[in-house]
Image 1 (tube, rainbow, N blue to C red):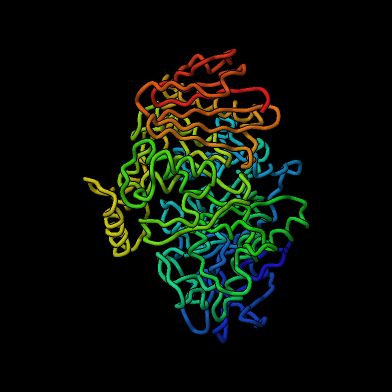
Image 2: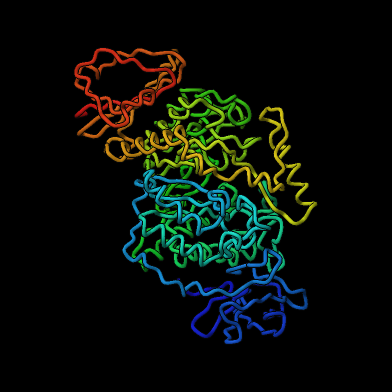
Amino acid sequence: MSRSYFGATVDKDRTTIGIWAPKSKQVRILIEDKEKIELNDAGFGFWRVETDKIKAGSFYKVILDDGQALPDPASRFQPHGVHGHSQVVDLKKFVWSDEQWRNPALENYLIYELHVGTFTPQGTFDAIRDKLDHLLELGINAIEIMPVAQFPGERNWGYDGVFPFAVQASYGGPYALQEMVNACHKKGIAVILDVVYNHLGPEGNYVASYGPFFTDKYHTPWGKAINVDDAYCDGVRQFILENMLMWFRDFHIDALRLDAVHAIKDYGAKHILAAMREQLEELSLISGKSYYLIGECDLNDVRYITAADKGGYGLHGQWIDEFHHALRVTVGEPRNGYYADFEPLVHLAKSFRDAYVYDGKYSPHRKKTFGNKASNAQGNQFVVFSQNHDQVGNRLLGERSSTLYSEDLQKLMVCAVLASPYIPLLFMGEEYGEKRPFQYFVSHTDEELAEAVRKGRRAEFKDFQREGEAPDPMSIATFERSKLDWSALSKPRHHEIFNFYKRLIHLRKKYRAWHSLDRTHVNVEVCKESGVLLLHRWTNEESLFFYFNFSDKIQERKDRFLQYPITKIFDTSDPGFFNNDLALPGASILRLAPKSASIYQQIGK
């Protein structure tokens, strides 16, 4: 688990360099643009050398045969950008103080997604540490960081990374990330890192010069697929596995969010995801710690989260975009593009109950039967949200819910997310009603590529309406416009929204029937005529009834449970319920305010 086949690894006064270049006849390291060191053929395309001539802090490049000097694709640091020299770093020198830290059970995660560059004015790992008390006050116990692998320039969502082992220099680099994770663990906050194994970005992508990292067998939306099942794939698979282990072992990351796993084309006997889970279990046995793999998957295929011994790939969990889509159309999102597949209320109820909306049903948008059932999956295997980086940033103007919907609907939406029998995720800034957008931005140095990105963004919105021009992804103004405005928290209305979120999260933690993710104790009723959805969740000791009135009228309900004493514990339409529960003995009728959510407790099932 500690041996590295890729990149530079420091051990006291000696450094081992590992390069995978299966078609090269000679591999050399060029140190500080001066001295060249020969690497030895280690078999199966690997080249290695152990030397005292290169140390932590040294700069180097790699020369394959008689070619030009290139950065190391497994570089641990690229302080001068994607075209510059690789720098040796000693990841073992950091002194950790998180020995007492224990990763929470996945079902207890309450996730807050953030982008390092726009979360704070400084856009660094160090600056994140200054905001941890804010997250603790909110009730967050896990942050999810968008990708930090080195990308071109200083502005990017992170999905154009080309050095998977190198932490983005403009964020602070590898040691600053270690400091941030250590600080999070001291505060009781887990760290999830978003990683990309389905493609590499277009600029600074040197891996193809080293070997067959890509295959012509399959294609993805980003071009050729990563080679995990074709000739020479063993080296690529090792590259991925070693990268995964590095984040857990050397950076103490608690979970990885795996980007678009459906775009990883692997028809080999052991899927790369299953191999990752297997390697992770071995690391867990050695370290005594628990780690998680959470996939983003667009296939509604329960095989991704099914254990390997039952024919699956073994991911611990996955994001559910369909919950988001069903919720959005229920609150009035136009049914354009992929939203056309979703019916208000009915599909939200199905996602509450079944996770997947399309689980063997015909999808008009896809024009085919789609998905399979997740009947045996647990609630802690799904992550839901009303906003995330994709669903906000991939709008034409990057608008947040705070500018699209009334405050009543915003409260209703977050109640739906937190009431679900799944792991909830919030997107940075939503907890205080951030008004600034989150837009798509890059900082490519190749102008031809930059123009192609601009054209691609314009084409992306052809199915989604709308007048107006997509913001220029290359403009620094687009990036600056996307930074959180922390001064908003000092304004009464935004602070009130923050208190709303804080109170709701507190209640979720308080009631077992609420925070337990037992999908067998969930029932949903829908009244399409009135626009009301009733979610019933229970344990043997208590029942909770979540009423969602999506209509713009008062709705009256007379339900069978009203014959028993009940307690109203929350109502989005009445600030009076923020601090005190209200007992309603033997109430005969409930009046639900327009565009509101209200929650009632009944002792006993």
